[in-house]
Amino acid sequence: MKNWEHIHLNPQLLKTFTVRAQVIDAIRTFFKERSFLEVETPLLVENPGTEPYLEVFKTTLKTQKYDDKPAFLVTSPELFMKKLLAAGIGNCFQIAKSFRNEEGRSAFHNHEFTILEWYRTEADYTDIMDDSEELLLFILKTVTKNPQATVLPFQGKEYDLSGPWERISVAEAFQKYAAISVETLLDEVELLKKAKSKGYAVTATTTWEEIYNQIFLNEIEPNLGSKKPTIIYDYPISQAALSKPKKSDPRFAERFEFYLAGSELGNAFSELTDPQVQRARMVEDLKLRKELAKYEFQLDEDFFKALEMGLPETGGIAVGVDRLVMLFADVPNVKSTLFFPIDEVFSFE
Amino acid sequence: MSVIKAGSIRKGMYLLHKDQPYFVTKTDFMSPGKGSAFMRVKYRNAKTGNTEEFTYKSNESVEELDVESKQMQFLYADGDDSVLMDNTTFEQVSIPNTLIAEKVGLLSPEIQVYVLFYDGEALGVSFPPKVRLTVTYAEDSTAGNTQGQARKNVTLETGLVVSAPIFVKEGNVLVIDTETLSYVSRAN
Image 1 (cartoon, rainbow over the protein chains, first blue to last red):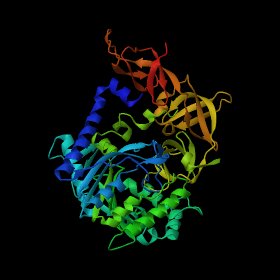
Image 2: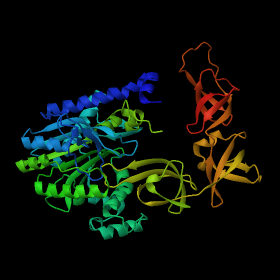
Image 3: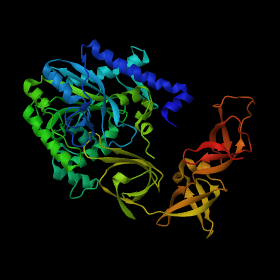
Image 4: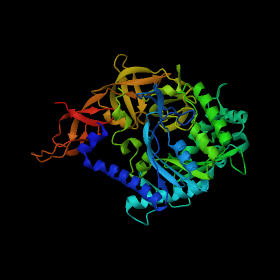
């Protein structure tokens, strides 16, 4: 039976969707009270983000006058929001749909999902850490209608959302949970050797990136956000994506993710403002996309024009709204937070 | 033994992991933003009954166990074990209930199940999609209740308790879904 049919039988299920509306209202109120401008940017674009491992949805733009053009759905609104930052709009946020193809059907993913992004200018990733702590607590107080609330009940456990959250660097986490030193972590040969001794499959084609992620997923992630949210920060520079190198230690990037109850909720950067470095990373991304047989497209030249015009020092983050709703509605998966999850829209049998 | 890619692991398979046989209960394919692709697998160790989780690279090779299945009949419960018999050879095997988990509540002498063996050792029991079990206890409910959704708990011959419609009575034979351990319909 599908979610909308379940609601017909059991109107109490509507409560999850009431919470969904409250969470979204709370996010808007939070940012508007802080004078962030709410913006809308295109979902349908000519050249989407270049993340090599994310597949996009491809379609065709037809016009009366010109040749057909390939068109893509965005995996996040980031590139367009940065053009607005270069235009000088200052602090801003957006709640939008984004699309990621080739996702597995899992408890935490839907190909079409709701994303929250916010950008704070004259700021860096540590300011976004503070914003994240305040936002989640604000949503909790709104949803529970209790201005003193700090505890989120979720699936039979309780989580303390009050700040400061647990903060641990990636290097500290590898040491603490996997007994891997920072020197081993950053050295491909040493890390693969260590992984093999731990019993992971390591072959001639296994890469640093695969093993880094496999150890992260097996030995580190299960320890994150188990009592209160955990902020895990300073990623190895190869995992920097659109973030700045760390000033005091350029082997790492100013990026963090935060976790709660086994779920990754947000991914934040001190935004990379250097157009040359950004272009070099994205050219590499496109090469890797080709090797991985992902859809091909060009770089978004307007994005580089924006970086050349000058992006203010900015901290920014993307947060999965469906996952937030899952937590605040106390339901076990993202599917329950959607009236029409992907496998109830498409028939897979 | 056959070698498969971790990306094709599916619920219901038996795998060999660190020399131990595992029964796969749940899989999650992961790739978003984490680089490359991974398969997070929840499985039950078929020897100890412990549930564990492991995340494989989706392109890594994993050994799928070729399990042999024999049709058998449940004889009796023996403490924490269930004793079953091969109907053709009359050979009996004793299987720890930890390997059957919550489905112990489906074992009645009337049903035929498949017992899965690997290397001569029983790993678990595979049930037909539906089984029939008799209700041994059900509270009387007032007639004339027209609310289609009214339910009550009833006890079956095996001790299993399921939620059933209010009209179900003692002595009724119920069709039970063996995947969800839930009421499907009355059989008579």
